[in-house]
Length: 481
Image 1 (tube, rainbow, N blue to C red):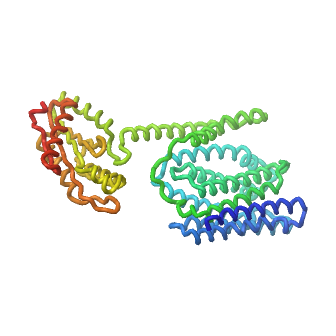
Image 2 (cartoon, rainbow, N blue to C red):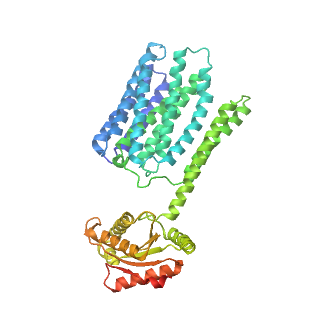
Image 3 (cartoon, rainbow, N blue to C red):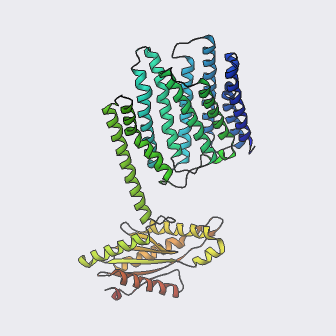
């Protein structure tokens, strides 16, 4: 089963070659399109086979995809009948079924996107919108506007032919969102992407021929692109990796990779590039349209840049393992609070917290277990601290809690509350429940300097360890003045 998808692609290539050969042999129309129809019917059947054999945890998206592809086959069959009978008036029953197929495919993509990406993933949505706006501008200039101004077409035909590029643009948006999301890349993703890109390319050629029937685009080229598209979407379902295709991403936002920046750069340059192309052709691009498009992209890029700056700031001040503040953020916050306290005279408290015998946890249960212990300790410290405190990971298994507007008694009470909160329940370290304790050193002063406060809290922590661990020790108040 692991190589069935490869064999299927080989069969699809054979049918595509047969379709091409039949075209040049000038056979009967119905016989000529039979290889295409075989792949059109085979695609939804192979998606069902892949779904049943690979058994993904969630089948909704794949079943929607199979249903959409079967609707596509039905519409193809009706189109063949219409062509064979020698004419039709738009919209036809085939058009209605094609529209339903597009909508089911779009719904399947939405299901995949929502399962693969945690939250709304605004950065990927903005990136996809930039790509879709660029594609929309091209679609309007080369397809929709010519259709709208073609006086020879009846209104029903205009609406029908215009619906296809609109639906294609919806798929462009969803495809860009799927690919630009934060989830992992895989063979299945590339097969889905390849299928959608080839389908959009074939649809674009078909629309272009519909607008200008003098374009030298052979019908066999469009059919081969559609055959390849159908083959790749079925191959994605047959691939064993489809079981993990819609697994949730471990990160909430994608990285700004060079490939992503290239895609966005190309999309942003579509507006001015198209304006120049139209100038060379001796045609004018609508100024309001070009201005609105460029303005929208400019605002989206600004929004994206603001998001990147905010993400970089969060990364700089947030510890990647525990989600607490970093040592750098704590050091800055300590300096600021000590400066304020020197002016106003309020007390500043500092707790230095160390996980007892943490090295033993790593040596006995492994580093993944140690990471789980640090994450749970961090969670309990953050939960037990009062509003306005700064909780940070200072380094390794050491944490700090900065508590402004605190006297010595309140600080020691906070230290005891945190110590009991950590020791109260065992920590789930994967395969084991571990009893975890912490030692805490506390220091408080009304006119502190950062170095002295940190030194006194460290000394109190050392005393707590020397006294047997799992305890809180406060430095003498006189030492902090």
